[in-house]
Length: 127
Image (cartoon, rainbow, N blue to C red):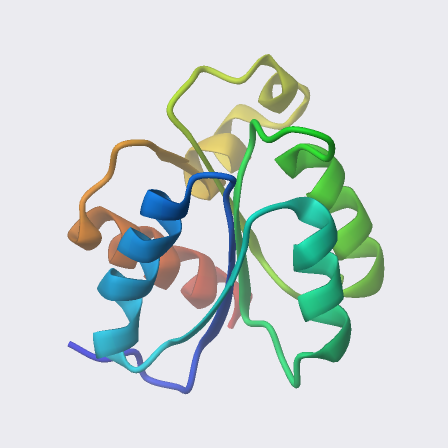
């Protein structure tokens, strides 16, 4: 089942397998997926992309983690929802409202169905 609109996702993870998985799960549904292996590359893509509808970022990455990336990204794109993902319990998410964490956190490993469901949730809340 395709998304209602043309959706552009910026997926950020230092694990290339995860990025390939995300792209394989979302592209057949009509999503355009930009992938970045780190925060700096993600910010460069965001600066030149026509639009980003969702930032999907790993929390634990070297150099710039997902929380730091989200802060910089949100300053430039405050209307874009962010979906965090991690295979670990992330103390840095503890600063956020627990309900917001539930809405915006995807625990790895996840299935394509879980990814699509979370994507729909964040996009529906934006609308």
